[in-house]
Image (cartoon, one colour):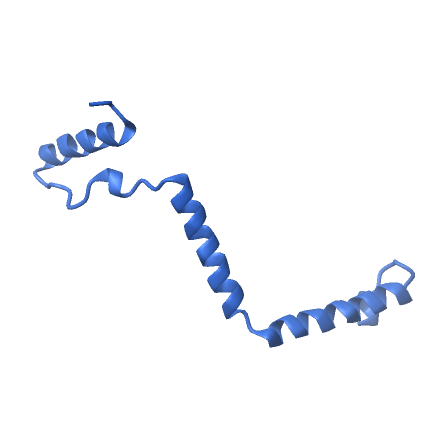
Length: 84
């Protein structure tokens, strides 16, 4: 049997739990995610966020950007906050 990180951590969890008389309900290796799982979870969260994003928020941001850009052009690239 090859000694892997999950084997070491599971043995550590067992001995730590045995000392405190509380046995873990899950193995520590259950909490260790592979890189692929982490990337998949990350992409899934981004996609959920993206598809739940309301279009009116995007439209407002674009309109505000255009307003700021026009004010910047009017100020020839200088301070334009007072023009808003």
